[in-house]
Image 1 (tube, rainbow, N blue to C red):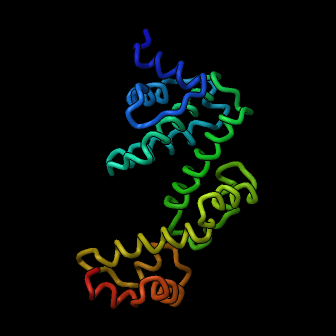
Image 2: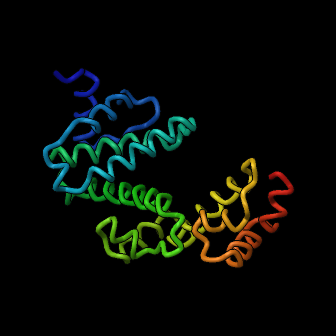
Image 3: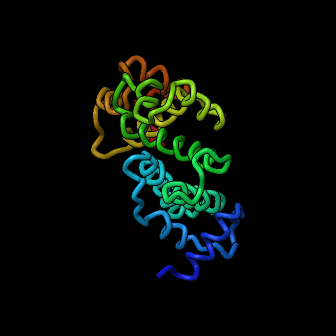
Length: 205
């Protein structure tokens, strides 16, 4: 039997009401809806999108990101309703949820394959089941291109690794983060940080 909170949330979502911080829509109900099984999950390919957005929701919750949480709740619930057939996949609302889900999954695929120098738009687009052009459009909407997103993730990971104890060889950091060569790593890192990797490490930043 469905809980009152779950039913209230389903009604709000199906009539298109937007969620806001402090709304009666319960975040727990959104997750309950998202985690319920669906007979269409296996042949629609939407489950990975839902899982990626759930992971984003978890990250935002742990970080106390109250700005992002309400929007993520709505996207998670909309994706779950698409899976359950409560929202038509071709509707504007569904297309928006699918775009957000694909972008979320694309970012997580980048993270998962970051160590591969050959990581490319074509590789990620193929894993997502979309065209390369569509993938570029997803990232353009964020203000950062696919290439810029990959570079930002590689730099972020390299900064973490450079601060590890005991220190690992800088060449190993470059390889782990997917830079094609040590020279490429030095060039990109120095341009971003204003310091070489060795100087960054020594400064303890």
